[in-house]
Image 1 (cartoon, rainbow, N blue to C red):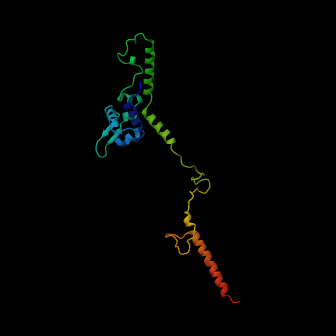
Image 2: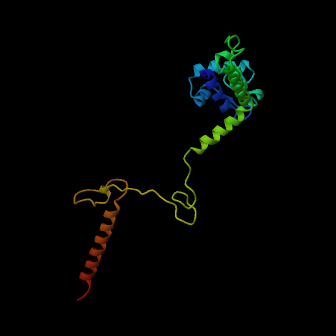
Length: 211
């Protein structure tokens, strides 16, 4: 016993659509990305949901698929019934499935378990599943730095800044006969030039002073 692929992806797309605002229309490609399935396969699934009255579709430039009120309030059981139906736990639960059902004690166990599964699916709204899944997924996303920590800028501390690496060639002054790179003069070369200028000026002033 297992759900079909159509049922699985149908539940996925319904869980996504219930978290969108009322009246939102989504394209087939966007819904396929959300359900992680090919658009061609999802198109067949959506057609079944449309026939069941859970989803409506509109063509045209502003067309797309929109979740109806019936689909927004649907249970998981209703979604599965709109697709491939609920799978049976055992073949003996199907109509005419087993001739032993009249006296086999195991049949009662399978039947009770099947009914319990139906009740669980009926009591599970798709809207609750959609929002719960969205909340869990958002919690897994990387969190921004808290205030007072590097990058937070709070707590009276200076905001953390990424260190900037200066190329080694900008720290070495140009040699004789070389010119500084265009744009801006290397800081080290500027400092050396200023120091040299001051020394030259000081020496000239000393030489000009009367003895």
